[in-house]
Image (tube, rainbow, N blue to C red; front, side):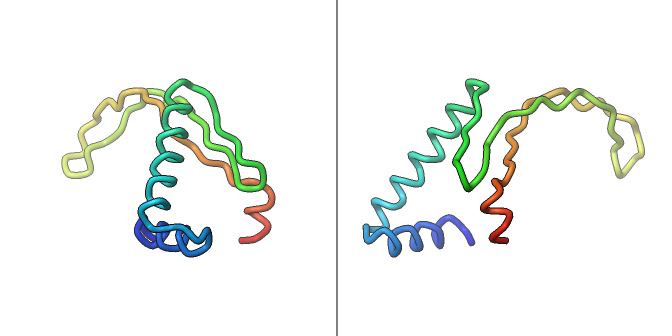
Length: 89
């Protein structure tokens, strides 16, 4: 499912227009992004938790040449499915 299909499904289920569904989805994504950027986590009971983890710097290899390259440390977004979501899948 892509974003357009998700918007269409939300609009149909909620009985709203696709424009309103798009605005709602964009608002959700923005709110989650801002919260994660602050270092906090977002927990949706029954669905899951969005959080930020730190990935340490490490050495990697260039697959073409085999040369060792340094990969910088960075923060990454993480999602852990909730108990109810896991049970439904």
